[in-house]
Length: 86
Ligand SMILES: [Zn+2]
Figure 1 (spheres, protein in one colour):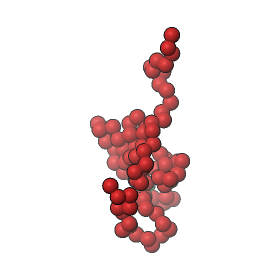
Figure 2 (cartoon, helix red, strand yellow; figure 1 turned 120 degrees about the horizontal axis):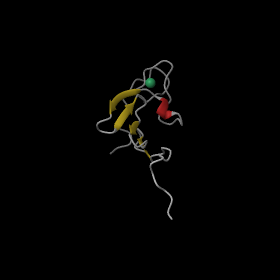
Figure 3 (cartoon, protein in one colour; figure 1 turned 60 degrees about the vertical axis):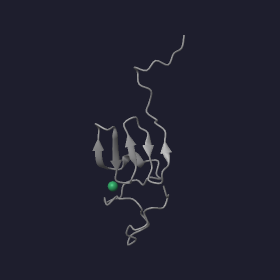
């Protein structure tokens, strides 16, 4: 896929390639705070959510950024997971 498939968004404001129309604007996909953006679509049955900054947030906390970058899951280790190898 082309990395620059969407260049038709409005440029009336500051450069903002995201879908966010909130005021104040949510964190961008580049921000470390990206998960704080609001949900625009939530599909728990499919295990993913779409944030208004274009980030796809998966149930396991993995992320797919609008530019195609993949963020590995980073959830804290659950108590149920056994990591001790005897
Ligand atoms: Zn927003």
